[in-house]
Length: 516
Image 1: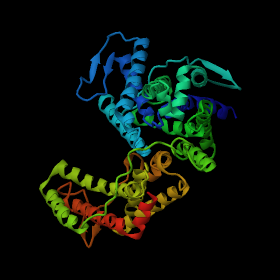
Image 2: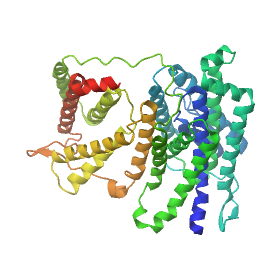
Image 3: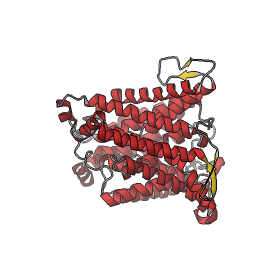
Image 4: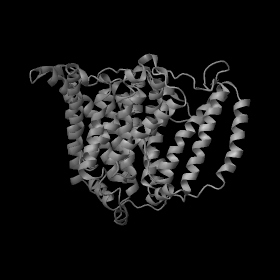
């Protein structure tokens, strides 16, 4: 029992980070109606900035076209590193709001989700280029003295982190009720136009909340860095359990958000020793399923994830008209020969890039159907593609299922996984659907793709070259990257593109457009 108690108390550390990010999500949503999933990326970049200042005294700018590094001092102090890093987070949030999200305030709500995903990916890429992708551990900021509690001994920093986020939540609640700025923020959330008529500036109220949210996220990221590996991906994904906690609080309650976040952290900590004691639970990524379970519970309870405001959002830019494809066969007669000539003329990395683009375009066709025809957004498409890819490796590599039967089975399995995801989220639309598919995609990545029994571990999974009638259509081999694989990818893309074009005018396509 003491092992479980200790693990649960240790889980307060990650839970505190989820809570800080969740509080930021509540702030930005109340002020601007945006569920800003890029907060995790803000925290990640600010934490890297803190690490660089502490270790070498460099300011690292996330701006293309400027000197990437500016040496500030040879004797960096904690105060300098912390203040500069928090200022960096605030400026990132301000710039993203003014340049990206404010111009989208009257666009379709799901466009803000797309923008947040793009911003997250961009910051991750910048961090990889400037800091590398290896795990880093920072020196402790909070005291880590042993604390005896409930019969166990744990480092004091976990409880300090939890206490800090509780104090932050209480302060934000008090600010929202008893200060003019807090009251103005609540007014903006209810009716921005009327608030503006009363002399307040909704844009600057929202921008201030965005900066405050980013500072909270960055501070939590810096404080938790000594107990959690810092890398561009894992830090950005802290926002997923934070989303679950914020949705539990209806993106309005600071108290419920903190309670849900700390509860998730404690539950994930509880699972660690439980997995050791119960053999069938000892699966990688099992803890990542908890945020998805919480989100599904919220959706099942309410019938929606984001109450009220998302449904009533003022939208001045409608979705574009979906025109039927004119002469799709004519497009194929032009595009396919151009693709064939390009595959034959290009060599080396250029041909490989084209072949990867052809494969990626097949995935993009799924967005044409789901977003273009149905008007909904899924952030789990690449996870579903991964399900098919790893299953294909098992079917062809271990079971010896021949081509093209193995790809058809793998495709069918991915379709079943997509059907399951669609069934559990069938009552959700718009931003709600985007959020639940984001949480599901991360859960699949951690629980499925993190399992070495599925992926093959460090050795990875290899797929034998597809062969039909003795003809090798694989990518590897003499003349890598081989033209034959490019021709196969081009053929699949052409068939898929023609099918999607014809779907637009079929009965099913017209029903999709009616739903849209």
